[in-house]
Amino acid sequence: MMISLSAKAQQDPMFSQYQYNPLSINPAYAGTKENFVMTGITRMQWVGIKDSPKTQSFSIHSPMGKNMGLGFTAQNDNAGPLHQMMFYADYSYQIDLGFESRLSFGLKAGFHVVDLDLMKIESYQQNDPSIYNLDSYFLPNVGVGIYFYNYNYYLGISAPRLLNQSLNPQIIGQSELVRHFFLSTGYVFDLDDIVKVKPSLIVRYTPNAPVSFDVSTHLYYDKVGFGVGYRSEDAFVGFFEFYMNRQLAFGYSYDYTMSDLRHESNGSHELMFRYDFSKGGDICREPKYF
Image (spheres, rainbow, N blue to C red):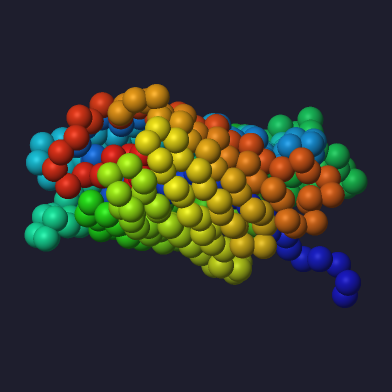
């Protein structure tokens, strides 16, 4: 009667700098800038804990013609014995709503490659079928998203992976990758020609799990940006960005863990780079802001 019957844990990679790489969660973001944009993020989560999550993400996207956009996202995620690689192509179609606003609809299609390193697992039950029937799996999936934006604000709703998939088809209902839903929004206040302030919010929902959110505020002054944020029941986050020029930017964030893991972890570190080939104009805000 006192045995635990199930366990749940983080599945999709976690990033603090989502606002600089919306394509990873919303395909409708593809092509919403004026030209080709590429972004890379690497995250080291809960530093100091053995086999803690480490994730790398790379994305590119560009407009195609007047109303369409294409993108591509690749992610590599390691968490203990579990290794995931994700490759997804993105397509979007934008509608001009007038009043300098647009509505973008997005589709995402691709696959996971999931592998379990059995050498990292200590099993107290010999030949436990819940573990040793887990091989490398190729898991195709699809996602959708909507993205509304103009020069000062944005609002996105998305489900980057719609299909629930089992990592162990021989044991139904266990070891599943489940769908996640995201809502993201932000607004850029122009205090003057140089100083900008941007509050932003990301809400995550997964069935049978608590709703979580990230809220943050950034201050931009010329070539530098600073920010603070809070992730519900998890961490306080500090941000720093440096913009070498109109195209090239670097960012860093540090998560100060607030959960019980703070006794074992030295926090989480995240590095970001972005190159934007856009030259300015139209209603597209610089990726510097969103």
